[in-house]
Length: 155
Length: 278
Image (cartoon, rainbow over all chains, first blue to last red):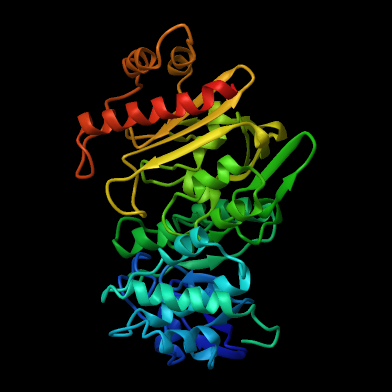
C-alpha cells in the first residue's frame, strides 16, 4: 500500500505492507535509524518515538496507524534541553538506549512539565539501559525538568 | 517484523466496522478487530495468531468517548490506559490500569484490548466488575447494552463479529473509597502474583482479583464472607479461600502456596484499610 507519513515535520512516502511496523518503516524506508530495534517486543523502549506528542514504542505500532499523525524521531529534535542534559550529565555509556530515553523524556517535559518524582519514575520505567546508567539518566532528567518548561517553538 | 500479510481497515462508524467484519469473515480473511493492537502485534510476531485483515477501531468516535455525567460515566473501548489514568475520571480504573505493563506501552494499550486479552490477567476488568458496569456491544443486530456480570465469565463472552464499544457505569462509583494493590515477584513491571481491587460501597466492600486463578473474577459468595464483620478478618479470608472459583495457579513467579499467602495478606490489608470507610 502507498503510505504517507508526517515524520519530523516532513511528508514522506513509502510503499509498504500494512503489516509493517513503524520501527521498520522509519529505519528501512526512511533511513531514520535513531529509533533502535532492541527487544522488538515492547519491553526495552529503545525504539521509542513520539506520535502526536505521545511516546510510543514503534515496535508495537503499525506504520499505517501513524498515518495522519505527527511522528517525531530523535533525528527531529535537533539540540533540545534533553539532549544537552544527557551529554552534560554523561547519561549514556554505549548509547543504544539513549534515543528512546530522550524521546520519552522529551514527551514527559511537554505533557507533564511539572512531573513529580513518582511520575518521572513511572514514565522512565518504560526504558531499559543495558549499561545500567540509571543514576546519570535520573540526574539528566531531573536537570532538564527543573530547568524550564518547553517553549512553543521547540521541536 | 510480522511474518505474514494482512489488510488494514479503519472504519469511521460502528456500523461500518461490523459490516466490514461480516464481509471479510465471509471472504475467509479471519478478520480481527484492532484497538491498541499491542497483543496482536506481539502474538503475530510469535506466530501465535493469524489474520488476513485487521479492523482498527480507533477512528470510531463511540470507542473513543470519555464522559462523566451526573448519573453515568462512559469509557470508550479504544481509550488508552494512559488516557484513562491521566483523566482522573475514575481513579480506581485509572490506578488499576496504571499497573499494567509500562507507561509507554499503556499509551497504546486500550481498555477494550486489555479486557479482551488472551492473557489470563486482564486487570482492567476488575474495576469494571466492581462498578457493575454495563457493556455496549456492537454486532450485526446493532448495539446491545449488557451488564458486565452477564458478559464476563473468565473472559468476555461476545459473539463472532461483535466488539466492545463502551463501558458505562454509575458516576457515584468514582468517589467511593477504593484500593488497588498489585503484588509482583521482583520488578516494577511484570505480570502480577496477585492483584486485589476493592471498592467500599454503602452496602459493603466489593472485591475482584486477578492473578490468583487463571482468570480474573469477582465472586458474590466470597464477597459475602469477606463482609461478615462479626468474624475476625483472618477467619473471613480463610473461609473465602475455600470458595475460590478455581485452583490457585502456580508458576515460575510463585508457587500456588506462596501466591495464596500473598493474596491472604493483601486482602487482609485491603480489608483493614477499607472497612472503616464502608
